[in-house]
Image 1 (spheres, one colour):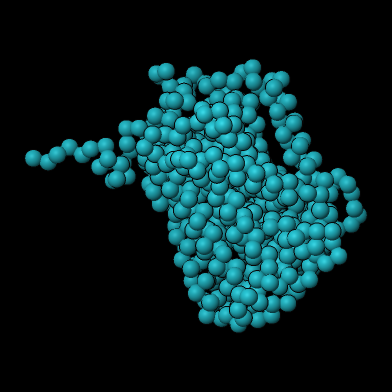
Image 2 (cartoon, helix red, strand yellow):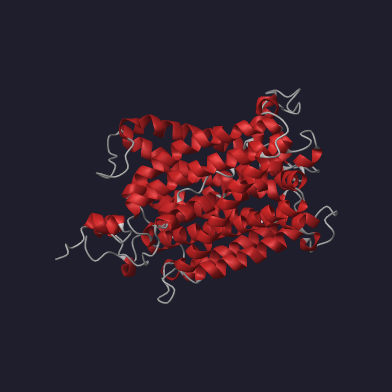
Length: 515
């Protein structure tokens, strides 16, 4: 006679455990999204959002241009800071692995007003990030073949920016269609893409290592003389260059945002968050280091214009180099899929609380595809509009990327700061038997808040080289990050305070049947 499988047996087998929906009931929601995602799917969602190949290849040129080869040290610096944030998120993911994780966490830690602002900032940032990631096609595809430069020949002042908008729009339209057709299709494409990305990343490390021409001591101390004569010297240049690393290591909360569609998310989401961040740090750090050690000419100006794509083609030759660049294109594609998937869940989570205009429509789950279709379309359209508005901006890459990162960091602060207040008041208790930081929780939480605040200020600092690199100089461009983020935050919260907060509350069709 065969024994009936226990809850733990089902849990280990990857099936839905009885407590999968406990966190939903605690927040007042009934389960609506179908649980189909396993361990690798949640890990793949986190690591594809971080996307080692996308981030390193998109912003390498920026780091080199502002910090020289020694900018590499910003990689472990950003990892250490983001690890503090990720550890805090792991405790929250174990207790509340629900859609729109940052929004719901901010709401539980800081109350409905903080929750709304955190969700609003994260949702806006996701749309900007979608546009920023889609722009990476322009940095890669024309280097594979000039045929992909559809606008002009690339030599015009605005050729690259206009072509980036065209390529990015096509990618966002593809991502919108895939996400609208359900999480299973997105997860399958995403997982296959992540598998290709990881294989390619490891292979790239091996190929670069085989072509090393100098030691790490030479690379890690070469500043190109940048920062000389400035008030802060090289440290100021290094802080600017750190944007290149800050752009890569975020989005790990996506593993939890898919929690309502995952098996045993309270156990798997924290693991996926840490695995995605640590894997990205190790693999990405080695790619950057070996690339700098292998490039034929470490002083070449092409490093600051052609970026990592130039290093790969110059070091490995056109044939092998182009194979790796096609893998980068795959990584960019699945990264856009993951970013939009996270944004859809966030919009759905806010809408079912009636915290967005037309909340009932935005929170409607398609009975056929079992996913919120309207948020997929809305986020895709806004992402394209952001691209089109910046079509004649030569600094489109650095400006949009900078603003996207700042808003993500601010949204994360909306979680870690009220969580720290809850700890200091003795009100935060991790889920029993789940991931817990124990006595290290308070110091880690303090470091997470300090890191988030300091890096947000650093990224938004009104540097002309970042926000107004080409003339004429305008104060509103130089202070663009503060102005844009401030308008989004204050304008959005004013709307919420005077209009939306009087309507907030879980919509009847999404409300749990039991208290």
